[in-house]
Each structure stands twice: as structure tokens, then as C-alpha cells.
Length: 275
Image 1 (cartoon, rainbow, N blue to C red):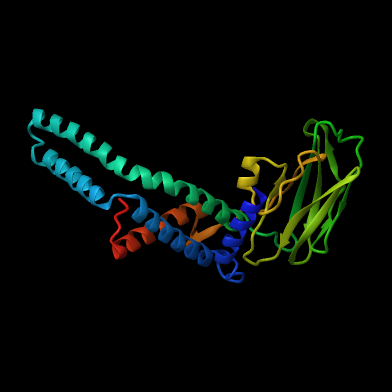
Image 2 (cartoon, rainbow, N blue to C red):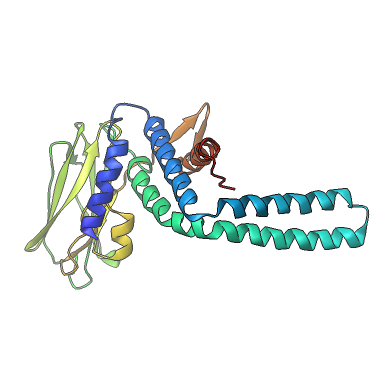
């Protein structure tokens, strides 16, 4: 899984890293365009375009039938049944490309999330660092120390929370840049990346123990060892906001709208019907 994540991170960086000083909209738009092109290619390979067009035309014909004979209840009821049947056939023609396409879409959204879900800490902002320990490592009697890079400093004494078997520090961002902090627990230690500044960079909010879903959804850093005392290291990165005029919009909504628009345009250019 680690090699797979490294491969996906490399691909994601190729798409997003060229825009470090630009608005997040630039990277989002470029990534959405490439994703739309990929989906058009998948639909072209996996769908029966003749069947899609034929089924869609029959569905439109049944809909027109309902509109034309809407004053006749028996004809309207039978037309509704035929519409439902044609709708089921139409969805069936799209099922295979949708099932094939869902896997790359999920992986692409995971990579986009690493760049667009959160932003680096601004200089002067407070940072909360949470370190959770394995239940077999009691938080009150275990030595836990922190080594920080120059970008951040400790802003308050740590707080140990026995109910969660965790310890938390409040830090402060002091200088722009990206580096690693290190957490020492007894004889073990682990690193965690931290990013400060206003650049458009990859952000990793947490590093957790090895597991399929944790590795898939948090690909930016290697998973923590399963036999180590630390189960999770997390930073409270601020959410990134995208603005359209006076309104904020979540990046996933913007990405879906852009992908649909690019997909329809590319599908028309290359003669591929997506819907």
C-alpha cells in the first residue's frame, strides 16, 4: 500500500505542484479537466455508445408520448410504465463505465483532498497537536517529548487526557516553510509533517496506524507502525475555502461541477455520450 500511495502522490504532485503561488482555483480547474478527460476515455472504452444513444432516444420518445397523451389516463399510466422500463435500460447501459470509473474517481478525490481540503497554518496562528497512544501505553506514566522544527514553537504546556489516552500541545506558527516535528514516546519516536505559510501545498492533517482505509484516505505520509506505542498524530489544519464572488463553496462541489462541464464538452468533441 505504501508503494501505491507513493505512486499516487507522485501523480497528484505532477498535477497540483506546478501552481505553488497561484489561487487554488488554478490547480482545481487543471485537475478537474484531466479527470474529465480520463472519464471520457473510460466511457469510450467501456460503454456501448450505440446502445446508449438508442436507449436514450427511446426514453425521450416515451417521455414525449406521456406529454402528448396526458389527457388520457390509461395511455398515461402505460406510458409511465414504459418510461420506467426504458429508464432502467438506460441506466444499465451506463452501469459498466460507472463501475469502472468509480475507482479512479475516488483515488483522484483523495489526492485532491490533500491539496484542497485544508490550508497550511498562517504565521501567528495557533496549532493544536494531538498524540494518541496505544491503550497498553498509559498516558500519565509514559514519557512523551516533542522536538519541533523552526517553523513552530510550543505555546503552552502539554495537557494529558487519560480518557482518550492522548496528550495535546498548543503550538504557534512562527516562520513559513514545511518540515517535520518529532514525537518521542519511551524508546520509540515518530515524525509528522507541518506546513506554515500561504503557498499552495499538500497538507497532511494526520498520521495514523497502518490499515487499509487509513492508508487510502491519508496517503501523504507513511502509516505509523502497527506495533508502536503511537496510534495517531494529528494537527488541526484550518479548512481551505474557495470563493465565488461573496460566496464560499466547498472544493468538492466546485470539482464536480467543473468535471461535469469539461466532461460534456470533451464528450461532444470526441463523440462520446456520457449521459
